Length: 231
Image 1 (cartoon, rainbow, N blue to C red):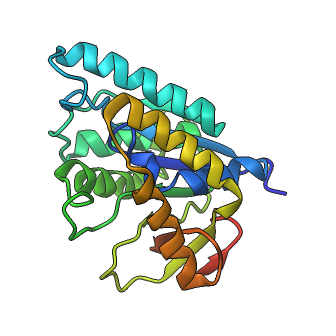
Image 2: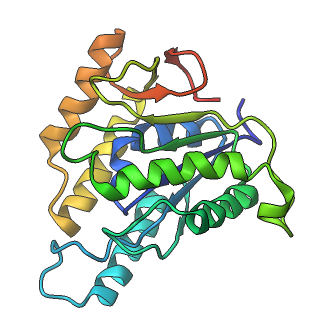
């Protein structure tokens, strides 16, 4: 049904995709291409013990690719410095070229946040860079020699409880077991996320929409509601 469509998930660090892993699985299941783009390699985490930053980056990159294989998604990692992602013309241009190469039909990224985890400065900067880059990817001279990407690519950001934007929900209950396996994989590697956190997140969101489990996004330029996909 969605063959030929591409969902881009553009986030900051490996494991950020846990907030939308069910939605990734939904899109893979309907035949869409899913590309998960991490701006950093997550080298500043202390979860791996007294290991040098470059080795942490290697291990986190390996984790990201393994998670991508579990989900059936393509994974790409850039080398923005972990904890120092900054909005700049250079960053906007760099990600615009990635978008021109990937050519997404919809984009998930970080939005504006008030809670401690989502308001990590890398998350805030990443969301702004990605949203800027979607616009810049339309401009030939920004992305040359790649062709510009001018087709619609509506933005969906990880939902904030105080958001006034329309809410778009995707039912993910069919992929519950995969989410639990992915959570267990990351928990073994970096000690997060807890099983209860995953269960509560999808069940609470689902209850609000009358389904067993869901993930909810802020819809920046499209209608909200319970949807089969984000396309």
